[in-house]
Length: 74
Image (tube, rainbow, N blue to C red; front, side, top):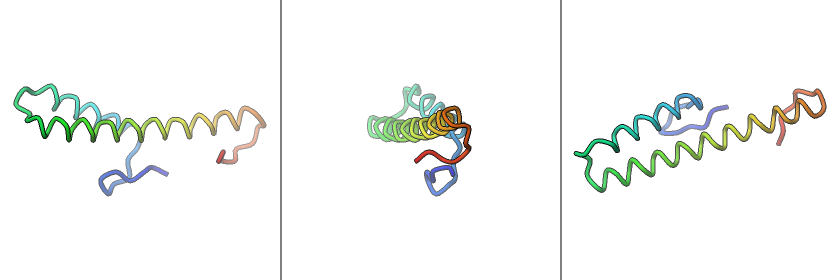
């Protein structure tokens, strides 16, 4: 199940897309310092979510490879 970010279900792909949008916004020279910090924090939160999601998938794959079962790894 996808984590809710900003009250929405978010896929890993969607999170990476939002990270790219944050990067593009940060590249804009018209962004204030306060907005830059906000964009940076939002991007870091999204990357943390992506990392956690990828780790969960990796553990499930390792569990499947290890014993041939398809149960969740927790």
